[in-house]
Image 1 (cartoon, rainbow, N blue to C red):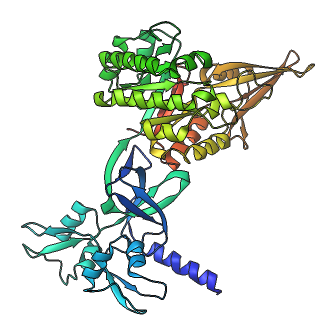
Image 2: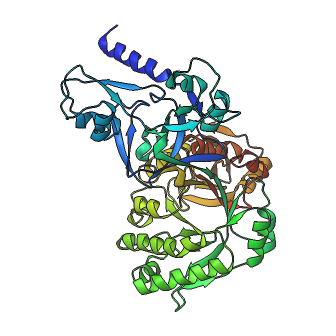
Image 3: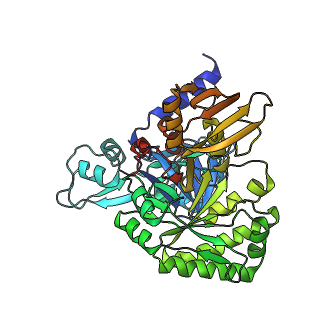
Length: 505
């Protein structure tokens, strides 16, 4: 075997020697790690001697993918090599020079090649009380019995009351920005659990219809279209419905009303570009949301002039500051990244992601209404790439993927090649397929079903949104540890869709 292969094999064997304790959070909830210390080193492997890939700051949060023993279950001994200094060794292992000197009884910073240095590690210490056993300590601290035995040099499974038992510090694998993953000491993290969001916007219907539509067991957030920017002195038109909020809360669902900007860049500029108007708008929103007992807000500002890019960030920051004391969450809709300066370039996704509780990527309109080119509303590869791009700027647990409960019927005049499109709900498409006796064909490139037919000199094409396509979208949510999924819009889906939404059973 050559040297490269041998090195790879040794690393692989080293890696698999660490026994997993906890599987990654890919179902109903996400495990989130928040940095406790002023700085925390992230390693490429679950071993302190591995290369450092990042240094995180206090308060930063990322999903925890898995937890394993690493090298903390036994004392770490470092053999000094020619390039080492006490400072470089301390930095490598995430300890201080003083801690190294104390652990090795060093009176100076001088070290020599071949010298063995003990690397001090923070341990939890448990004092044994009556009824304790290794298995109980294993369950309590989330460590395995063999690690407890090895670290404490135990010759028997019996524990002596009053004896101090060291609890090993495990490694957590976290998912960071840019798709990077790395390993960090568990003691540096404050762990919490986040329930995945399954959200639906409401559209087209009255209050009683909406209340019926939201009676889906896996839906936990609803977003009614209540607010809109206006060019009046009030700046805001509101159409709130307290009955809807009460009905949602009685079903255990949160309400995040939507505020839109009418897709009007001039109107948006007139409000966002004026600090006093922003202040007035924020105050009006806060008062209404508190009065209606809303749980959050969904900000859907689209087609913003790029000159208002930072004004929008300021607005979200001011809104978050005003709503935070009331426990009201802030979510912001963003387009899938593209080259349009108004529809995409005006959104500072990284800064918005730092402020907002959730960033919702609208995973649709790859081929928009009126497009001269026919195609899928949301092909799977297009969505996957969009999520990867967004994960460069926003931690994945803050991202909600919005999926379409609609598609488009593309109609091409075969004599002129002119194209028209019609928005179709899932229910409407199923009726077309049934009435025309069409057979769904699998489109491998777009990863969804497809139907077509010709009538009266026109070719009709539909990339179908159905249970299969939505199931694949939800797979992206699980695979990338996203915060959840949203749907545009409730009431347009077929009923079999909700059976696959099982994040929060």
